[in-house]
Image (tube, rainbow, N blue to C red; front, side, top):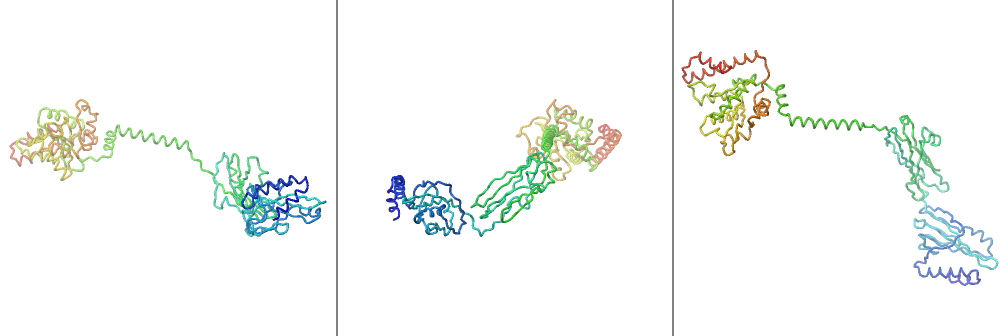
Length: 506
């Protein structure tokens, strides 16, 4: 082997004693490491020489300064090659046949990525009967094959890309270009122009920032950012171009700008706030005054049922025949409905003529009324009472014909168990208006507003129209009562009957 032959030569002089110790330590290290590798610590007097080898291609490496040593040497110099990768050295022969030492040169037959690194060549020669040596290094870097395209190109901005800018702010236009490495002529550049001028000819508010995004075997992807301070409206008319260039070609791309539509944030916020406030106010107003609003709507757009049907009465009141309920009906309900609100009210005990059949007249009155107002109290709807007959007639008429609506007015609280079957069925689908004593006596109270919502629409009319309407109602009552008397054989005189009806209407 060659290394044992080298040791005695190095031991021949005291000056080379240190080299022997060093070489012995090297031998020891190489003996202990598998694959003939050791920690790299070769002294080199000069900086490494850079050498580039394309991938999948080959090249011959010659040791630097070997020719000078050949001229001074008395014999042919000997060269030993070492390879360092990740601070670990190895010497020829290497691990495979892709690299081979031929004479004093190192032949790389097929360049691979893992073959990159420092290659040391140790030259030993004779001069004046002394053995001298020196070490040089070559930093080998792989590049992409020369057969690949080497023309530069712009990746961003694309042809359809648009930069959104806003006046008065800092604008950054980003350009990204691919710049391949060209062997022997490695220069390349990327730059911005504004209206055909480079940035050194423009004001200081135009700046360019370049950075390498990727280095792939010396092929660079570079990002160039054009920074425009205080972007102005006239800058929208400028032409911004990004360009790349190397020895093989040139490419340029224009940056298309679009001004950002600034939304009136304050105005939108105020408008939204006002809208929400108005909605809240409307919700509160409707929740507090929904009855008033509903009555107002009915007074404007509601249909007066007097012009759409041939009913004689607006309201027929059904109640328990006792003193308390009767007083409430006659002195409160009738008075307000007729005198204050202008409704025509039918009360059986007041408007029926003597001598008639109660059942027939009750059914007739209910059929000729637009609403049946039922005053619910503990004594109402006893089995077999007239009030129960009125309630049944109203519910049947409402269910069959649909021309009558039943309204429940709770005069006094009634337990659920005390309600007859008809009232329990009616309570599920009908409106219930509660009388609350003194709180409900005022016409502006909730009781009367709620009741007016359930009653027919009554428009405000002149005094002459009211008098004419009262006369028509009196004549209709007279005609109806005469028809009933003719069927029951009543002997009352027409003049007295007419006076009674007219007084009732008044």
